[in-house]
Image 1 (cartoon, helix red, strand yellow):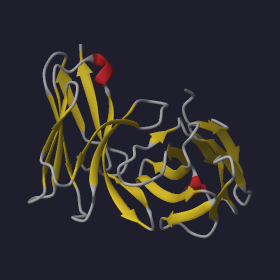
Image 2 (tube, rainbow over the protein chains, first blue to last red):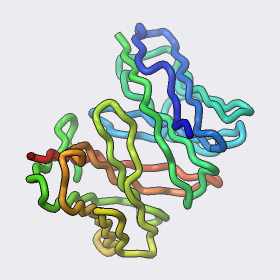
Image 3 (cartoon, rainbow over the protein chains, first blue to last red):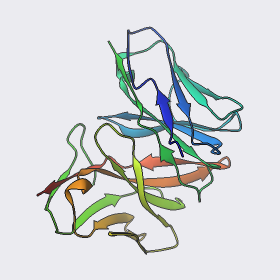
Image 4 (cartoon, rainbow over the protein chains, first blue to last red):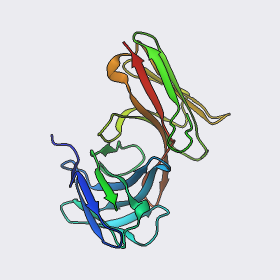
Length: 114
Length: 114
């Protein structure tokens, strides 16, 4: 069974640009969550999608957005990139996203903003 | 297990000894508490979880202890092996809007000395 797949693995962007990251969940998993990991702030929750609907959102500015497709694949977009957006972006999938289900993480996309 | 900026607390353990990693949490309303292991270049990997109405749970070579009175969580690894070297995160599962989000601690780096 394939794990959570995130693409691309590495990305370098310039300040002011926008970026789209992709996440393919484990087959059969309908919940996809996104997290940002930085040395200073650690792992922080961005948002969670289930059946193409955003159910939960963390404390990030509106420049961070996401969506989920009917096949459960998800994308997140960051517009007007800032240097502080440099981070490892992690996607996690679970069957339903309810409290008794486990989240499986992908390897992440390393975004560097220069 | 709290960190300050880039400097994660580090625990160095001799191979074969037992390791204890500690974590303080903040939300008394969390339903589950989880330990994740993150190796370099990989996403967090689930180790073990414990429901909030329990105080101890054992897995293979790992035990999680939960003390709700002082909001403290610990992970015990028996007979630590070189492959256990990684950063360990505790996380709280907080439910809302039909889903959950994970709130992570800053992490503790475990180094196993062969």
